[in-house]
Image (cartoon, rainbow, N blue to C red; front, side, top):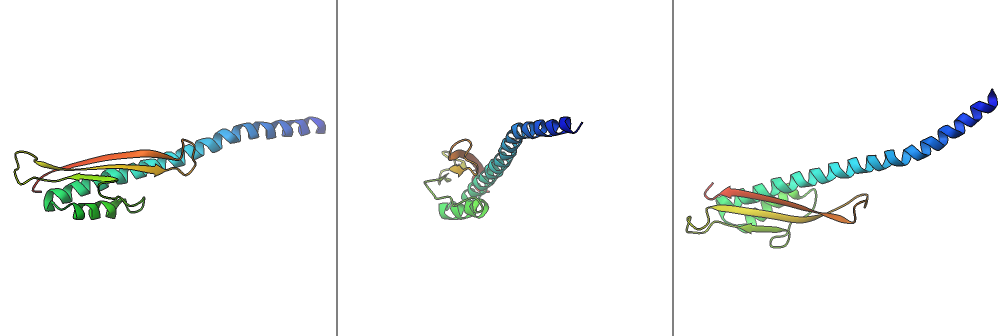
Length: 129
């Protein structure tokens, strides 16, 4: 009876070794997906805040500052590089809304899908607040 118990323990160790890799991979995918979801939500909020600030003040520097206040845990957005802002014209018939677009590359922790993935977000607000 002792001999069969030893064989069963060896089989259990082999089965665990096979299953453990799948469990660890799933754990990394959950962590990476949650982190990317958090960055996407931050980018959407930053774009919306930048568009709102641009619609009220029509000043791209203020809009960039507001976007970076929200997005600062993930990185720094640079105007005309990661953050594109269009403002309100003096003639409201040509452009009646301010827009902010974020195109940023999110670095991955695990590197399972490459070094980085693109994060895109857009915000639009009516001019004048």
